[in-house]
Length: 84
Image 1 (tube, rainbow, N blue to C red):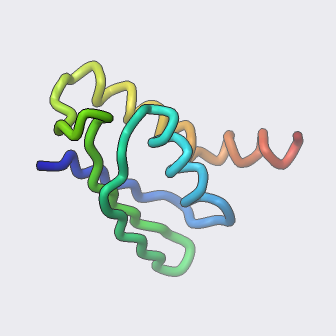
Image 2 (cartoon, rainbow, N blue to C red; image 1 turned 180 degrees about the vertical axis):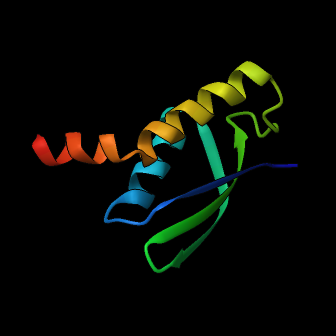
């Protein structure tokens, strides 16, 4: 009973780290991760639960997680890190 999260993005250094950190900050437990890279693309699938071990069902919570992952995977975030 996991929430399955699939992220497809342009592959680059530290992408997996940024995605995992976003999941951590969202108070999620990653039970399994399947990481694939195809040339310049990455397709990462995470099987997660909340801190109580429950599947994420609330639409607003799912939207928060999606926003955090989109930010983590964005080129804009990469540019901010390079400028720091």
